[in-house]
Image (cartoon, rainbow, N blue to C red; front, side):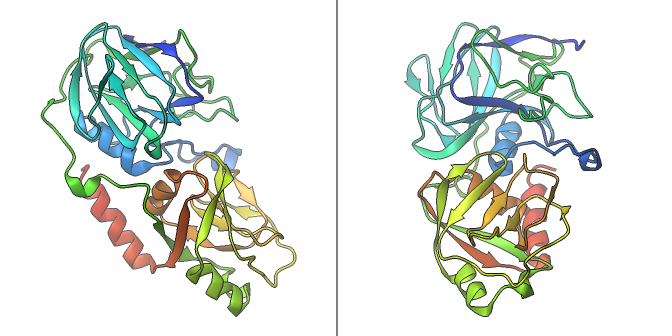
Length: 314
């Protein structure tokens, strides 16, 4: 049992709302995937705005449709997608901390800009860790608010530590303009070329990095299929290998699949390479039908970009 008190009650669940910390590390050898926020950028900013440390659990809300009632005074922040959130029926400003009083109602409607919003509370949500993490992976039945991998349902409660409930979190904090992404714009996704990139035909490589790709409607926390010109690889079979975050596999139909946080742990399709963590975050906010482009980057550039991002939350 964890020492926690009720903070928010679910009065309408919506299609998918999951509790996520930074992810479940060091367990892929067990066949367990990492989970965690698919948009690391939005999740990190929501926590930062209420004064939480890196890794603190926050709520990932996909598509909206969620309604919560505060059971005590809280300091909260919403970052990531604009899901037309309201507080007691009034528009809620995203990317900033604000006070939420007991009895107030926070509701997410439908996507306006982006796909996934992140709700953080000062002090962080409390949940039982499973294999060292509260990250919710529904397929594996691990983590989440109840420790059993369940998405939020009507009547559920989100809890906080009684020692930290309502503490910290200056309500004047707001993210700078450069941190707020317009997810409606075409996205350029940084990709680190992988070991099999040389097995693709020259024409396919030209297409991969010069064509526009459309986000397919077959997309979830496991991965996103990209629709566009077919890519051809000389490899006809491979021994299955471990799959890292952002791996871009190309199955026989030639349509790439970018694998995200809830991906399988091994796979046997050839790979163009891997999207960087920040590129994964950007892709995770794309609605079906949006256009993206792939851009090859060197590992030094990708590492520098990630270090710059993390330095904000040190």
